[in-house]
Image 1 (cartoon, rainbow, N blue to C red):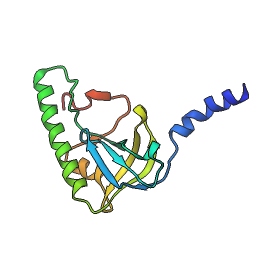
Image 2: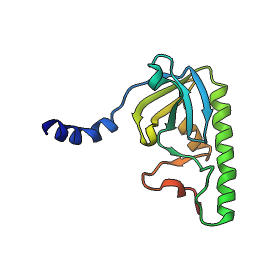
Image 3: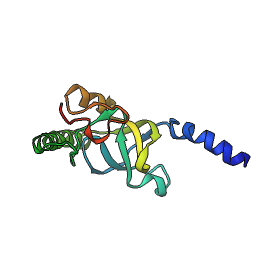
Length: 146
């Protein structure tokens, strides 16, 4: 019983823990402008191969828009394509890609600051208007009506 209470109380702290940094050995795929799949060969395969990573602190437009009108959906999908293209080109052309301040997020994803050649990619995307600051609870409608 004591263990169950401890586990219940410790769970939020574990979810918000900073698990350090890792060098990405392979970018497997890109889902959208803030989510990609990578492999880290220094980690055991069960956690290091084909792991989804969400870029911390940003919200890129959604490929599957949940906006209410068809015009808003079309606009967001076009913006999502631009954000994804930027991310693909930026990371594929980088000499090194690093995950910093790694945390565990929802959907078994990692959430991390992503750096390409020492530059914070999330901050670059914010500066270019390809992402907005992440706000918890806004979900898939963050870009609707903007």
